Amino acid sequence: MSVAAEVIEAKTRVRVAGRATDLGVGGCYVDALNTFPEGSAVEVLLSWRRRTLQLQALVSYAVTGRSIGTGMGLAFTGISADQGVTLLDWLASLRDEPKQESLREDDAQTASAEKAMVLKSESLKEAIEELVGLLVRKQLLTGSEGGRIRDRLSRVAVQDVP
Image 1 (cartoon, one colour):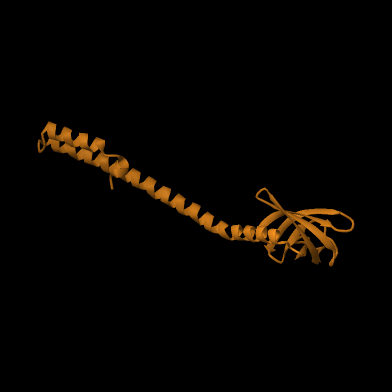
Image 2 (cartoon, one colour):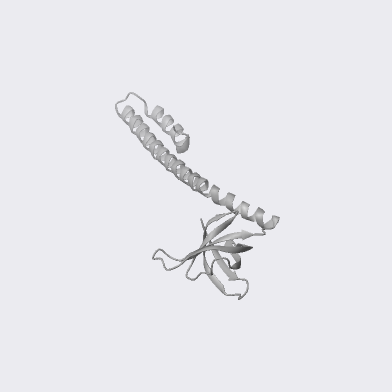
């Protein structure tokens, strides 16, 4: 998971923007171009889905000078009940996102299967119409019998044909 993050050092009010990853109830990791020293008291603003959560934290470690990027691990301190509820709500929503994606995939598969069924039904109707025409031409059905069958077939919705 990744949410927008702004980390503000408590004493100097210097701000660092980044992306919070590995978010949990105890803290997060913030990918950022600059970091604060280990042990720094910070305020962190996390923004996700048009909501912002403001938390106090301590920099538990800083990663600098690596080719894979820089950032800092933050340990949340003194989370209020409201903040905790919001954070747990976010985490629960994130846990459900793959399920939602799976539901979208299931919907796409269902739509694809329905489309295949409609195409199959249309082909079946065409085959029946062709068969009725052949039976009339071979005089195994009268013209009026063939007409009645075609009328009944035209009243059947394509989706109703198995």
